[in-house]
Every structure is written in structure tokens, then in C-alpha cells.
Length: 206
Image (cartoon, rainbow, N blue to C red; front, side, top):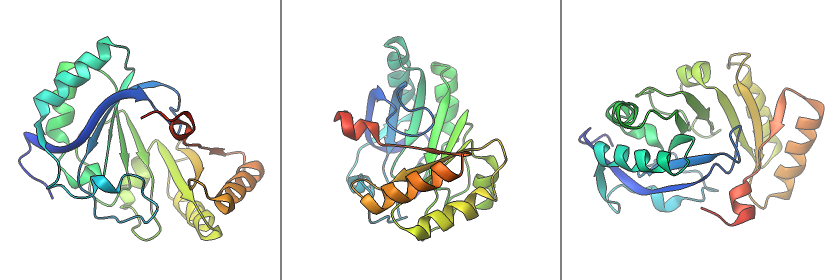
């Protein structure tokens, strides 16, 4: 899926609040890249899967947008998708670092090799497409979506391969009562884990 490194297929860019995970509630500028072959059935951004339906933007243009967002209060940049690591992210992170000097966060399933330089990596691994070991060893945040008890077992397996410093979060699948109960019970019994909720959906914001 990697194309001309000077441009990237972009679904959307927007300035909002981080809705989930360790940095939930903070002002952030989001760059949502197109392209994903991981195929999660519960994905809420399936429109981002194809690359051909979305326009390409230069990394300089994206850096300029991030710079404007910084002046409007963004505390950090989030590169998400889709699966952003389907693309070579090195030119983008280089341009962002040169132009706006904000911390750069990555949200990934970890199925592809890491490219680019990041201040925070959120790894959201999937049972049907496990992540590469390097991503487990380098992620700052492990965020596992929970629908069934199999996801809890998977979360335990993933955490055993992460550094002790990695933040551990369980996130119930949206409108999944079983996932809610399983995540709540696990966090209650295992204090190293925290609960992550999709607050942006509750607030009906982007």
C-alpha cells in the first residue's frame, strides 16, 4: 500500500479531543490516513479501508494544518486510520517535527513494521491479526477491545510481551454489554489495567 512518500492518502483531518485511551480528554489534531487490510468486523471507520476513494495530500500540507491546529490549542498530533503503518510514515513525522514541534502519537494495530518517529505509540492489537513483536516491545499504551472472554485471554497474552511501563487498557466494544461486564470485572480484579471508554461517541463529537 506504500505510495509516493511525499504524499499520503488522507480520509480526514480535524481538531478535537482525544476520545479514548490514556490521553482521553486532551486537545489533539487528528490525521486519519486511508488504507486498512486488517478487517475488524466491529470497525467504526470502515470507510477508511480503501485508499482509492480518498485524496492524497502532501506531508507539507499536513504539517501546515497541524501547525495551525497548534496555534488553536492542539496539545499533540494523532496519526490514525485505517491502519497508518500500511504507509511509510517517516516523511510525515519528519515534516511534522520540523513545522510544528508537537508530540506525535500513533494509533496502530501493529501488523506492519514501525516507520517514523513517535512520542507515544498506542497499540490496539487484534486476535485475528496479532501484532509484530517489535510493536509490543516499544508501545507506550496497550489498548485491547473486548467483546468476549477470548479477548480477555488475548489481552493477558499481549501484556506479557510488553514492558512493565506500558499502560494497559481494556476498551469494551461499542454497545457490547458482554464486553462491558468482562472489562469492568477484569479491571476491578487487576489494578494494573485501566478502563478505556469511547467518550467522543458519548459526547457525539468527532
